Length: 109
Image 1 (tube, rainbow, N blue to C red):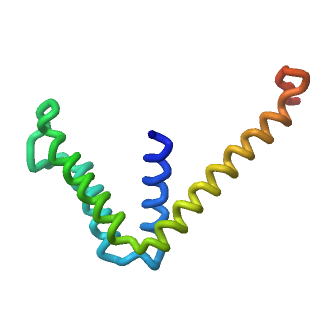
Image 2 (cartoon, rainbow, N blue to C red):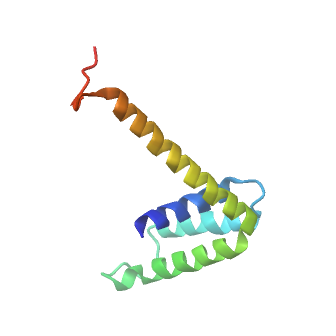
Image 3 (cartoon, helix red, strand yellow):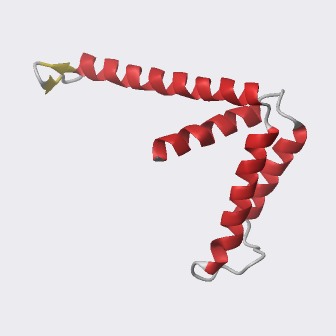
């Protein structure tokens, strides 16, 4: 489940960096980040109850981003994230194979 969330957040981030994404979507995203990180809240941060406004706002904004970003851009960004993740795994595997000989790590000189 957390892998899917990471991929979705990464795809949304990539979509927000594209020029084809509507400006109002970018403004909503930046405004939300500012609100969530700011020390001012609609509901003071009491245990559990205080985070209700942040959770509600984040849920609403994720819904808005998923509906407001054109589906072709979002799909392209999801594919880009998958490609980048696969490349990263492949690179790490290659480095590991280069540094292991007979089950032991190769010492660097």
